[in-house]
Image (tube, rainbow, N blue to C red; front, top):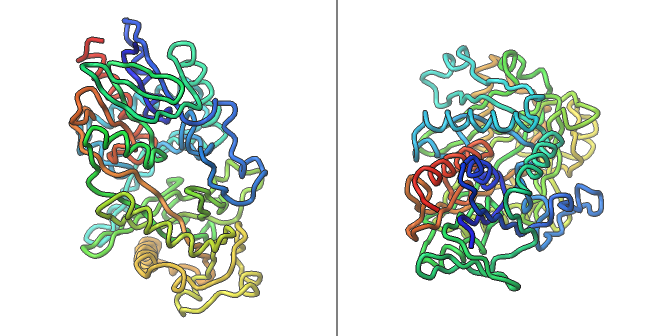
Length: 453
């Protein structure tokens, strides 16, 4: 019998387990992971064994110890974006929790990466009275390799203190009297408390767990948009004091936000849900930094169900991919003139694409709302820099951010089934590494202070 079972070993689950171990009482903790052991989680694309996403039964990129924490390890410490944890438990509480998260990360080696702040009072002043505003955060951008090192150290710290079961698929969860039974095809695990912390990869299995207790999500969300690649010095006036500036444009009809600015970085392919999208790589992740800057402009769209949101996004991306991992590229000048960018134009373009793609016309590839979002953000940037965006700027279609459906829980992440908690990104409350980790610390403290195991 376990005191607490954590389903999922992503960031929220890891920080929950770490916090629970601070108790003087020795708790019996179980962590269950569908993916492979830590050292075995190799993506066939990252290892060079495949050029396209083959949609593995268990994704080694997302379903593993650390979850999406390994992807780029970017911890944005803020309430301005990345989730609604502040609305749930209080903004000041969240900031304090994030400070704890950063201290924990530094214990495992994050201190080798500089913590920077994106706050810029001059830009905030320029945005007053406009339809856009500047979002701020303290950022610890670990990068993939450092993040991997830290996760390895955290794994070594936990593995002899808690039971960790890899390649273990929980087929169903039930509760009899005060004991939960987590059923696997080979064995049954029993626990007094259960935390679902499956991140963004839980999918239908996560929903099945919830439905077994008559818990239904109330809406789904997906963010789609264009990844931009421009000259590095084009934004130097607004990046002179910061590595990144995050711009949010919002009216009653449209919302758009810049994500993941990578000065001297490269545009790379992102593989998820069997799809191929345009993503950004930090310059620290490559031996040959580029002369370009890239970032995405994403627009949130809400649906009445998780499946509806997912089907909408998959339909658009599959249409672009055409079954061969295709990514489309268009020059900004050609977008303005609503014409196809040719291969010859890409070869002659002064801004060279860092990702090989196929010339095209985004008007023929993606819904117009995402082009409108791009144009509004570009207008905001021009207002801030007092310069026009270079017409040879490159636009990639399409980038996407998937979310788990929103689930109703109380302020301590407990569902309507007593003893069943839904934590981190799978709750629909957090959608960033920092807020997911903070939610883990928060729940861990609550459980230690309020429950007798």
